[in-house]
Length: 179
Image (cartoon, rainbow, N blue to C red; front, top):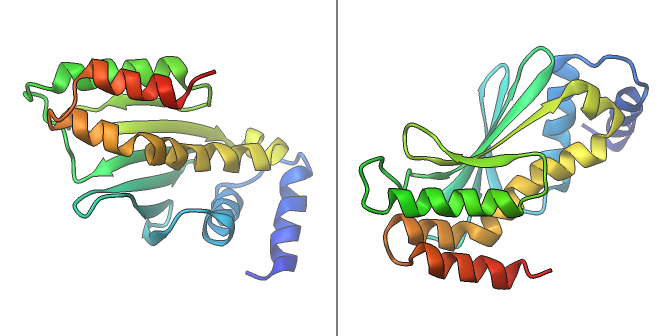
Protein backbone atom coordinates (compact mmCIF):
# COMPACT_ATOMS: atom_id res chain seq x y z
CA UNK A 1 0.00 0.00 0.00
CA UNK A 2 1.49 3.37 -0.95
CA UNK A 3 1.15 6.67 0.92
CA UNK A 4 -1.86 7.85 -1.11
CA UNK A 5 -3.74 4.66 -0.23
CA UNK A 6 -2.98 5.22 3.44
CA UNK A 7 -4.21 8.84 3.25
CA UNK A 8 -7.37 7.72 1.44
CA UNK A 9 -7.93 5.04 4.07
CA UNK A 10 -7.56 7.63 6.87
CA UNK A 11 -9.93 10.03 5.08
CA UNK A 12 -12.46 7.19 4.72
CA UNK A 13 -12.15 6.40 8.42
CA UNK A 14 -12.63 10.03 9.43
CA UNK A 15 -15.68 10.44 7.17
CA UNK A 16 -17.88 9.21 10.06
CA UNK A 17 -19.49 6.67 7.76
CA UNK A 18 -19.73 3.15 9.15
CA UNK A 19 -16.60 1.23 8.23
CA UNK A 20 -16.51 -2.39 7.28
CA UNK A 21 -14.56 -5.20 8.86
CA UNK A 22 -12.33 -5.36 5.75
CA UNK A 23 -11.56 -1.61 5.84
CA UNK A 24 -10.78 -1.77 9.56
CA UNK A 25 -8.47 -4.76 9.04
CA UNK A 26 -6.71 -3.02 6.16
CA UNK A 27 -6.20 0.15 8.22
CA UNK A 28 -4.89 -1.65 11.31
CA UNK A 29 -2.64 -3.88 9.20
CA UNK A 30 -1.22 -0.87 7.38
CA UNK A 31 -0.50 1.04 10.57
CA UNK A 32 0.95 -1.96 12.39
CA UNK A 33 3.28 -2.90 9.53
CA UNK A 34 4.35 0.63 8.61
CA UNK A 35 4.62 2.70 11.78
CA UNK A 36 4.92 0.25 14.64
CA UNK A 37 7.96 0.76 16.89
CA UNK A 38 8.58 -2.89 17.89
CA UNK A 39 10.27 -5.65 15.91
CA UNK A 40 7.83 -8.36 14.93
CA UNK A 41 6.90 -11.17 12.61
CA UNK A 42 3.45 -11.10 11.06
CA UNK A 43 1.17 -13.99 10.11
CA UNK A 44 -2.31 -13.93 8.73
CA UNK A 45 -4.06 -16.78 10.56
CA UNK A 46 -7.29 -16.60 8.62
CA UNK A 47 -9.38 -14.11 6.68
CA UNK A 48 -10.37 -12.21 9.83
CA UNK A 49 -7.25 -12.43 12.04
CA UNK A 50 -3.87 -10.73 12.01
CA UNK A 51 -1.21 -12.29 14.23
CA UNK A 52 2.03 -10.62 15.33
CA UNK A 53 4.98 -11.98 17.31
CA UNK A 54 7.15 -9.44 19.16
CA UNK A 55 10.64 -10.19 20.40
CA UNK A 56 11.20 -9.22 24.02
CA UNK A 57 14.30 -9.46 26.22
CA UNK A 58 14.22 -13.25 26.31
CA UNK A 59 15.64 -16.13 24.32
CA UNK A 60 12.80 -18.43 25.30
CA UNK A 61 9.66 -16.24 25.31
CA UNK A 62 8.03 -13.66 23.09
CA UNK A 63 4.83 -11.63 23.12
CA UNK A 64 2.13 -12.56 20.64
CA UNK A 65 -0.78 -10.41 19.57
CA UNK A 66 -3.86 -11.45 17.67
CA UNK A 67 -6.28 -8.96 16.16
CA UNK A 68 -9.56 -10.67 15.29
CA UNK A 69 -11.97 -8.60 13.21
CA UNK A 70 -15.66 -9.20 13.84
CA UNK A 71 -18.62 -7.41 12.24
CA UNK A 72 -18.56 -4.31 14.48
CA UNK A 73 -15.30 -4.51 16.44
CA UNK A 74 -11.76 -5.84 16.61
CA UNK A 75 -10.65 -7.94 19.58
CA UNK A 76 -6.97 -7.55 20.42
CA UNK A 77 -5.33 -10.18 22.64
CA UNK A 78 -1.70 -9.89 23.69
CA UNK A 79 0.05 -12.64 25.67
CA UNK A 80 3.43 -14.16 26.53
CA UNK A 81 4.32 -17.27 24.56
CA UNK A 82 4.91 -20.01 25.41
CA UNK A 83 2.59 -19.98 28.41
CA UNK A 84 4.52 -19.31 31.60
CA UNK A 85 1.90 -20.05 34.24
CA UNK A 86 -0.14 -23.12 35.06
CA UNK A 87 -3.30 -23.08 37.09
CA UNK A 88 -1.78 -25.45 39.65
CA UNK A 89 1.46 -23.47 39.94
CA UNK A 90 2.53 -22.51 43.48
CA UNK A 91 3.00 -18.97 42.05
CA UNK A 92 -0.46 -18.69 40.49
CA UNK A 93 -1.98 -16.49 43.22
CA UNK A 94 1.01 -14.15 43.34
CA UNK A 95 0.78 -13.79 39.55
CA UNK A 96 -2.96 -13.10 39.86
CA UNK A 97 -2.25 -10.46 42.54
CA UNK A 98 0.26 -8.83 40.19
CA UNK A 99 -2.23 -8.80 37.31
CA UNK A 100 -4.81 -7.11 39.55
CA UNK A 101 -2.22 -4.62 40.78
CA UNK A 102 -1.22 -3.79 37.19
CA UNK A 103 -4.89 -3.26 36.26
CA UNK A 104 -5.21 -0.84 39.17
CA UNK A 105 -2.52 1.32 37.50
CA UNK A 106 -3.45 0.84 33.85
CA UNK A 107 -5.43 3.78 32.49
CA UNK A 108 -5.87 2.50 28.97
CA UNK A 109 -8.85 0.80 27.33
CA UNK A 110 -7.54 -2.76 27.82
CA UNK A 111 -7.12 -4.97 30.88
CA UNK A 112 -4.95 -7.87 31.99
CA UNK A 113 -6.38 -11.20 33.06
CA UNK A 114 -5.30 -14.79 33.50
CA UNK A 115 -7.17 -17.06 31.12
CA UNK A 116 -8.12 -20.71 31.75
CA UNK A 117 -4.89 -21.86 30.03
CA UNK A 118 -2.61 -19.85 32.33
CA UNK A 119 -1.87 -17.15 29.78
CA UNK A 120 -1.48 -13.65 31.17
CA UNK A 121 -3.53 -11.83 28.56
CA UNK A 122 -3.97 -8.15 27.83
CA UNK A 123 -7.33 -7.81 26.09
CA UNK A 124 -8.79 -4.85 24.28
CA UNK A 125 -11.89 -4.36 22.12
CA UNK A 126 -11.93 -1.57 19.54
CA UNK A 127 -15.30 -0.74 18.04
CA UNK A 128 -15.23 0.35 14.41
CA UNK A 129 -17.18 3.49 15.34
CA UNK A 130 -14.26 4.44 17.61
CA UNK A 131 -11.76 3.52 14.90
CA UNK A 132 -13.54 5.82 12.44
CA UNK A 133 -13.72 8.79 14.83
CA UNK A 134 -10.41 8.34 16.69
CA UNK A 135 -8.06 6.31 14.46
CA UNK A 136 -4.85 7.59 16.05
CA UNK A 137 -6.10 6.90 19.58
CA UNK A 138 -7.15 3.37 18.62
CA UNK A 139 -3.78 2.58 17.06
CA UNK A 140 -2.17 4.07 20.17
CA UNK A 141 -4.21 1.69 22.33
CA UNK A 142 -3.01 -1.29 20.30
CA UNK A 143 0.58 -0.09 20.59
CA UNK A 144 0.04 0.46 24.31
CA UNK A 145 -0.63 -3.26 24.76
CA UNK A 146 2.90 -4.05 23.59
CA UNK A 147 4.31 -1.09 25.56
CA UNK A 148 2.94 -2.62 28.77
CA UNK A 149 4.55 -5.96 27.99
CA UNK A 150 7.80 -4.22 27.15
CA UNK A 151 7.76 -2.58 30.60
CA UNK A 152 6.47 -5.58 32.55
CA UNK A 153 7.75 -8.60 30.62
CA UNK A 154 10.60 -9.55 32.96
CA UNK A 155 8.49 -9.05 36.10
CA UNK A 156 5.62 -11.14 34.69
CA UNK A 157 7.93 -13.99 33.69
CA UNK A 158 9.83 -13.85 36.97
CA UNK A 159 6.73 -13.96 39.17
CA UNK A 160 5.34 -16.90 37.20
CA UNK A 161 8.51 -18.93 37.70
CA UNK A 162 8.91 -17.93 41.35
CA UNK A 163 12.00 -15.79 40.85
CA UNK A 164 10.36 -12.75 42.48
CA UNK A 165 7.52 -12.34 44.95
CA UNK A 166 4.43 -10.19 44.51
CA UNK A 167 5.90 -7.61 46.89
CA UNK A 168 9.14 -7.40 44.88
CA UNK A 169 7.27 -7.05 41.58
CA UNK A 170 4.95 -4.47 43.16
CA UNK A 171 7.95 -2.41 44.31
CA UNK A 172 9.40 -2.56 40.80
CA UNK A 173 6.12 -1.33 39.30
CA UNK A 174 5.76 1.42 41.91
CA UNK A 175 9.25 2.72 41.15
CA UNK A 176 8.72 2.49 37.38
CA UNK A 177 5.27 4.12 37.34
CA UNK A 178 5.80 6.73 40.05
CA UNK A 179 3.51 9.72 39.63
